[in-house]
Image (cartoon, rainbow, N blue to C red; front, side):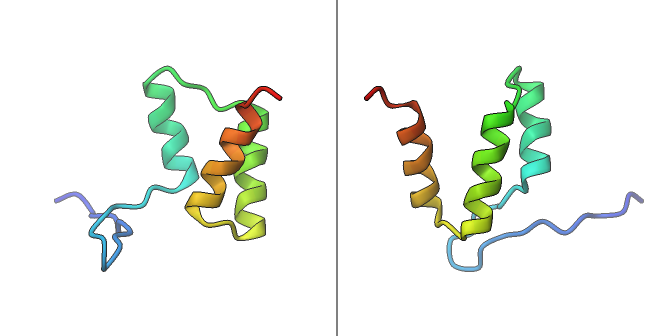
Length: 66
């Protein structure tokens, strides 16, 4: 039998959490390649300890015009 991997699952939300490496692999299958800027933004968000909402705002800010 195949060895099962531990999958992070939020106790309250019941949602699964993907790591950045796994997300990158799934994105490649979908035809999306992470750019250096995207990787840096994610790394900065992790190092600053941003919440998911703050990280989303940073992404939106980087794509907004003006």
